[in-house]
Amino acid sequence: MTGKNIQFRTLRSIIQTVRSARSILFDRSEIFHSNTALNPKSILRDLVLCAIAAASRKKILLHVHGGLYLDKPAGAGSKLLIELLFMISSKIVVLSLTEKRNISIRFPRYSEKIEYLYNGISCRPDRTKRSYERAALVVGFVGRFVVEKGFDLFIEISRCSFPFPVEFVAYGDGPLRALLLEQSVRDKVHYGGTFNFRQTREVFEKLDLLALPSRAGEGMPMVIIEAMAMGCVPIATELGSIREMMQNETSGILIQHQDDEQMIRGFVKAISSLGTSISIRASLSRAAIDNFEKNFNIDGNAERLNQIYMSLVS
Image (tube, rainbow, N blue to C red):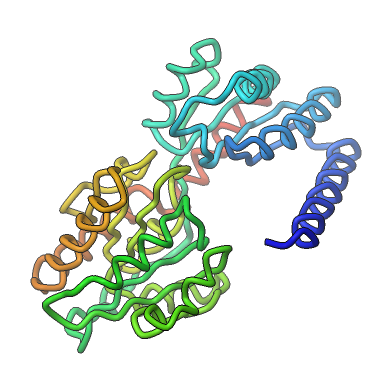
């Protein structure tokens, strides 16, 4: 990323923060719902906004969505900022029981404030559109092309040999997009571009498997929920709340978080297994849809969020 791009993004972030601060000051709502990530920049920005909300006598619902400090301890300075953010918040909502337990252990003073609420999307799965017999197995990466998401590992996985035809497709953008320009990669990975919310169903219906070889910073990835809703079988690193999102070898495949070479071998083994057996892949696909309908449908999640709102103003 160039210096000008960094300056532009910094200026845009400052402008957005100022606008948010003005909105908080002049808005008459009783609750300020702050979506944050436990990353240094997000913590600092949202601490400022939550402090303004607290000064305006609003109840603060802090909704934590992932971040580096979900997986590793924060340094002294960042930990202090997190403590301050938690202190002024009326309620802290995290994305899973796993996160609630982990954060409660590290910040026991605020454990009574913490509740968990799964992410959810509005979707009606169509089981009739899923085809299990294609000329080639289609494996996709969907998300930011960054080291944390393991996009470079996805590229390395595509270089491996498989006992059947495999097509690799990457949807998204990010700093590592240049990897797709390498001649050896262009022959292996098709770039699908970016897509909007309305195109989500179309994208995941094209994929047999979703590969998410993340290294760090995962909360509860929306791409896994979207994949399961469409019957696309997720294969993901066992990080954060991902282990809670699906049952291993039932509604998806979990890969142990190890060094890069071991993770690559784990993903290759999983892809090979699911590509070899149509019956196993079909079983996991159907179970993924069942899992979505039971745990990640937006209707049930919205009702629970409304209950949390009501508890703040009652």
